[in-house]
Figure 1 (cartoon, helix red, strand yellow):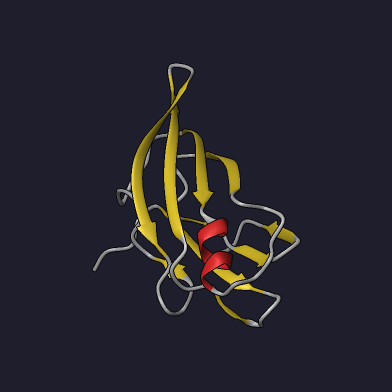
Figure 2: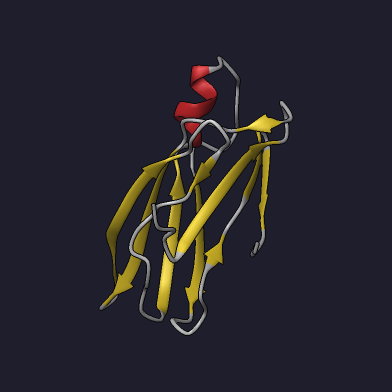
Length: 113
């Protein structure tokens, strides 16, 4: 299985475990509007290894995470029903890994490797 140009890993820092089963979307900004180019779901390890093509053109991208459904499945009250991360892609870069550290009332992210 090949790895896409953009991958993610979601960790539930509240429980100390990977966040499995989170729906993830990837959009590209095209002519002023966001166009969905891929969907996926985090696996048992909280990862989405195949989210879109192996190569993306340079531009602005947005990754969306359905955190409401994830927390509802565990009957956990949460403040953020979704998380949206916007980032720039340079097609010359081989790979972008965008992790999400998630808890019921906070989240953080960074450019991973």
